[in-house]
Image (cartoon, rainbow, N blue to C red; front, side):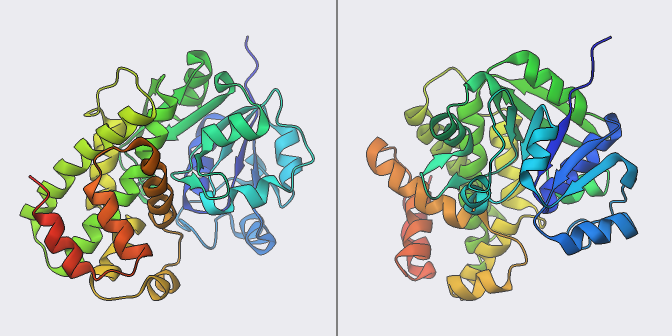
Length: 331
């Protein structure tokens, strides 16, 4: 009988909590690293994360909770990173434990600001980890709906199909359906880009545009995503699959979407700083917008939506005027 792999979850937010919940259905024990020692103490006493998805109850005997990232890394064979991309580099600098011979999966929907790389590329180039030991966990799936045990779908991408199958099996459950993919780079870029389009959808809503325009915006968004990813990583892929189009739609339309919420505030007249102060969770799309815009200066894909969001968030352009011009560029 094959021995079950050991998993560690890195992060204390909503996605980390959702992934811990899914893994605990199928595994007798997981390691869970989070910086917040008060949250760890709360989980041990009250069996739920006080800050995120607090309706999720854990059997704490299944959890090896730790505020030492090296302890979690040393325990596990498979490590799932689920922290905001803006904080990843800082957390990795705490490492004394080796990542060699570990299988790294990213549930992070963003670009590492310090290197302007998606997470998989960051681990490959900065830590010399083979792509066969790097994978991506993507949607379409909101952590909040996992907490509510609503039917959700995950795509697990890895260069090594067997490792993708291991993770898919450990995450699957009565309300979680999983499929595997070999498009590591494409699915990860899609997960990053859809947050930018969700900000655009939120801005449009805040400005008063209706459902008709939102449909056109999302339609243009998926085509823009296809152009961008094709320039970055050419391979045969169906952009209409759930990992691309499905993830874009749920992030663009859902009330659970923090990126849409952030964009909605911008559309209503909030400054970037004030909108961020209102948010209880990080809007990955804010950081992704800058990275994608500058990356595309090299590739030259046609990206009017990314360009519009960048000009609003980083150049201080008035959202109403920018979107008026954008409406003439969409079809």
